[in-house]
Image (tube, rainbow, N blue to C red; front, side, top):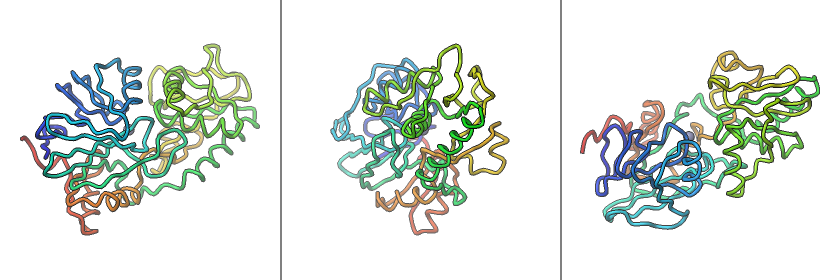
Length: 317
Ligand SMILES: [Zn+2]
């Protein structure tokens, strides 16, 4: 059904799946840089096609609408929303003998700014496991949203300018929607705002406006990329109060490492319990794990599931 050659390939049609180097034909699960390459032909969802074009300028693209089955050299392909960021897709492939589900990055808990996840059943499951360690159990989004709104509101009341640092694609749009829903005026860094406009086009407006070059006035919240990203300067009239939003906020010393005043564990990935639950929903005969700790396979095996890290198996074709 598949082979591994520094990345996942479907055997019958040689379709590269989130492979990081240019291929004749490649599926891109979503528009985060660690899943994208300039394949000669790209298969992906319609929103991902637009996000990839905006961020990387890649094409040509064969966009597959949700719920539609396309046949690609004898393999039926279908996309299902992965609940990670706008356009993020799971790929279900069926070659008559068996079915394979590749999750890409995914999340079961609904987000305000992307299509709700749909998890189909499959014989073989290839899954991301970014937070595949029991120490990663996220609080509910509702709780984190409330804490974030309170922290931003407090900063404004202290005469500070809250600057929320978040990944430009996905997390920033979610945070902007959370805060604008709470009546807070949000200004988005230009890198973020360009992507938010694609969100709006697909039915997920963030409610944020473009941060002017002159900078942010008093009384507003700014959303900017992470501090680790170079060349991202934000001008504010008041002293910034820096907030990070990332699943890695659960790590010790996250606030110091991220160089912020507060850090909240808002993630767009499945946490440990959601990863385990996803396997139950798919009901596969065999699981291959990727994009995360190899030890996650051990947890699955202890739960009676046949699991192996993808990178350790099916090398070559
Ligand atoms: Zn991602």
